[in-house]
Image (cartoon, rainbow, N blue to C red; front, top):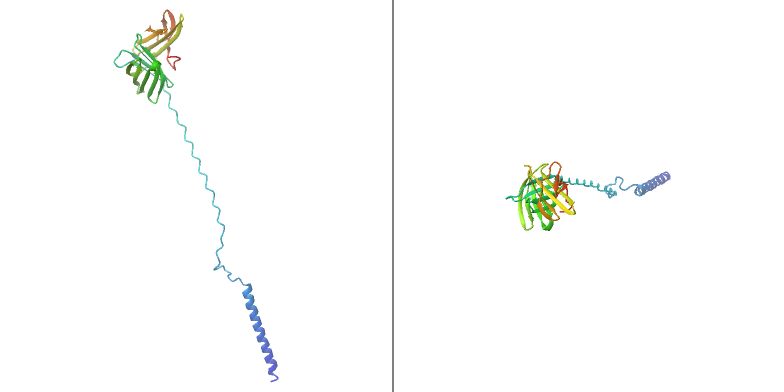
Length: 229
């Protein structure tokens, strides 16, 4: 019995020490180890959403090209009205239209306005009007003046044919003359002297020279707006 006593005491001590070591290891493992070292079961980390790139500025719409202006009309038409009895000439320079209708005796009317997009629109004194169309080498329309109406379809002409006009003061009298020169060389015109109309004397188409009441005048081709109707 005396021999076993110390041995039992030693074994008991070893057993107690083993228990204490085991308990200590268990506590350390529970307190220091990451319970989820691989991140399983952990809520996924929420990353801040990437800022969306601002929408690309849409390319500014290209400015629509400026409308190309239509070419301005330059033309002259002349001939007799439908049914005869009067002659008409229409001269257009850069879209500005001047028309003259006369009977070669005393009836006449001057008009001015525009020629554009195939249309003629002119006005004159005392409500006179000319409306019409042009194209294909001719002009067609209607003149209304002094309670009368003339219709016409006339062809394009070239110099020396066309419309001529002269204005002057002769012995204190106001003189205004209009002439239409036709392709066959014939002329029709009226001269007013202080508002009294009379048949116009012939002009020289090459120079425009003409004599009115003994005074030498020059008739010019009409190539722009009238200074007075």
